[in-house]
Image 1 (cartoon, rainbow, N blue to C red):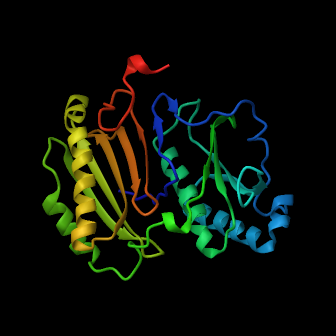
Image 2 (image 1 turned 90 degrees about the vertical axis):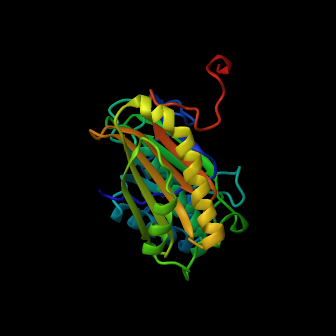
Length: 284
């Protein structure tokens, strides 16, 4: 199974099958600003060439990972200190205004990369992520403050106490037993030596998924946090992909423990009982 690297942002973002649960912009003027990271924008000039070089490197790295980046640039925004926002426009494969399972992963990739670029000297206050659909129409936008150094955990960096194989064995031994099938457990280190876990689950029907999901999500979090604390597993990010046995996705979930953030996409008919949410009658 193809493994997709992913990132996380400051607050949780849930992308539902019915569309994005994000701040929706009005009009197309934001998306229409397609200035690339190679252009010398006023904001980039004000912050010096080094800032622009860092953003250029980000753009190159993200595109090499296969992230559908249409444009990435520095903009000025007086609400942030420092007053720099790194704005990225992403191309969704959606044909309408509904988010796809890949969109939250791409959003997290962008936001994680920008957050960690602070270690290389990026002096930004926020990251903006914009999605457009296959027709080039604005689907969603969001802007998130970047994490400070004190908010990015250092416990996950090298050297690692355990090998990937040892972590896989520990996780397999403790994995919760449900009617869901564990199709694949993939544990890798990225180019920065950060440990990622991808858990691929299969389920025969929606009834089984809705019955077992709340228990499974809580147990997996408890197990991973326990392995990190008690065994030094140093699992920084884990992703859970839940699909029908025929391949149709039901849930794509990411938890970045290093940046303390989780986000997900889920199908409309999948239970929401596994995460805090207001009852239907309380929603406006």
